Image (cartoon, rainbow, N blue to C red):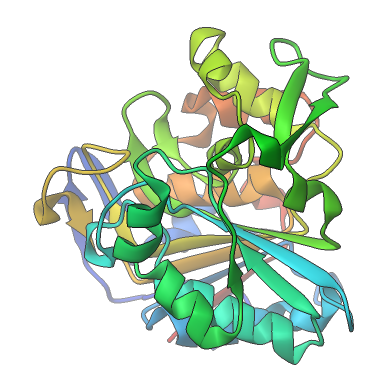
Length: 308
């Protein structure tokens, strides 16, 4: 495939829950992007494979996990494990992807790889039913709870407009490398749940966010200095309606897509496009760009597209 060739030239278009997902129109949706062959990729998009296969290809394109993880470093991975749902329901991050990420981190020399979420349903059920606990242990990672306030430390957010402080899980503050692994899904309160929204699972006091302009609080927290070193968007199964946890399997589209970027705004903009939404119509994406967290204009980015 050529460097700028977009994913799935001959694929069809699916309409799910009012959103149009064009399997063949990704290049048209995102724009052509920067064409300089000397520029490192700002975003990698992979389509058409199983989670582990797509991640292998994406990491190879972006330069390998060794760019982010060094020998003897500690890594914290934050998937979405918020709901007591099985992997096929797309309420949580795909466990196979989490397993593959851990394997890459350990192969790069990581000393420890921790995985956690501040869940919405009972954390022990979420960890088990999602399949993530099983796959983390198989890969050699360590599951850590996030269910009590003792795990969280208060930090300040100097650039926040609505959100000035937050209590953040100690692993985010203490680990050398932070990898954010959201699942692409609809959300009743924010239209979409993406990379920046996934960071609500690293804080304790998120009820304040819901009562004080949720979109702005999401953007505010994204300005905090401890940003993810890498964002990996799981679009293998996408929850297209009735999010954040779904009602039935009919809510789910087997999209077989994956995005990787160090820029939370860019990856959220690309994920919105995949979902059939305009990034500018998602307030937390627009707010975060206005606060200089990243860019939602994908035509300005160097994008690598891979079809499995």
